[in-house]
Length: 312
Image (cartoon, rainbow, N blue to C red; front, side, top):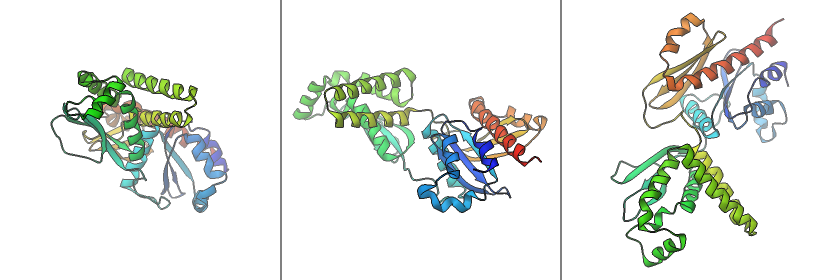
């Protein structure tokens, strides 16, 4: 590991986030995301394994930048948005590999239910939640909700077999409203609702394991992880929002996120005095201040580490 990498990697947090590498001319070489920023970035100076094609790029890295995110899902969206805006030479796929989807909550009395859709127009009795990345993972989250909140068996248009299944699950049409509200609360990321849903799944997973049904226990564990994916904090991509710039400043570094139509679509950072940055900081929406300020503080630490290496 080079001295630059050694000093800079040590400043990275062991949290989810997005990183990018620059060459000696300031050009972006690569944008990536990580579950653990410190571990992932350090891995470029160890055995690259199936990433051997990146070895020439690693030799050209002269700068490391990073943004810490509140969840893996948020990091996935930020990486996707940045790659849709610009595709550095060493990135292969614009926008990443996951497919954006929505969860469709149909609360119409006759045939209520949950589903995964790419997008659909507004309709009476239907709510859309999202967007989310990863169709397979989101379908697992829907299965998790159906396991503990079987909305599909509360309709008035059920067959006899479906009514029997509802009775076995302990639900009927009389339960429809509260189940709809409970699902909506989970998908709206209400803390108590998410905690109750996770606890119910954990209880069923543990019960399956205790009764030696290990395949079922493994399936529920996968559903738990998927539910965490869709309910974890994620602010960098929403369906609506103003076009704004969110700025943070620390130790002479101004970091700016350009938010367009609800998406963080660009990330820049440059040296800037505090007086010159003040107007941009004052224009930053309050909801974005912690994110932008955290990015500025991390960015300043990484710049400081690189400057220490460059100093004679």
